[in-house]
Amino acid sequence: MAEGKNRMSVLNAVRAKLVHRMFAVIRNNQDYQKDYVNALV
Image (cartoon, rainbow, N blue to C red; front, side, top):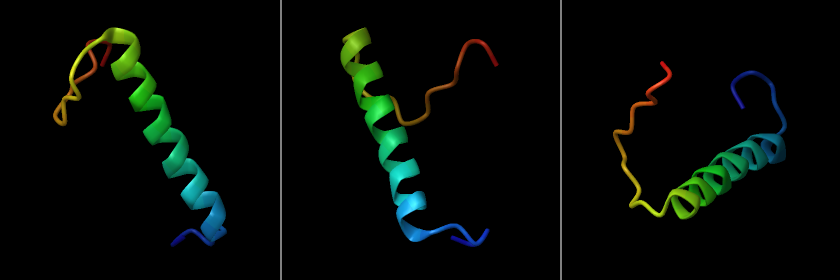
């Protein structure tokens, strides 16, 4: 919202990130790791 974005745009972006992470955890059959580091980075 600091960049002048609409509140709903911000909420939808956060929602999309959360759903993406949830499905990744389910797909990989792993517990959520708060401090996960991507191996490609």
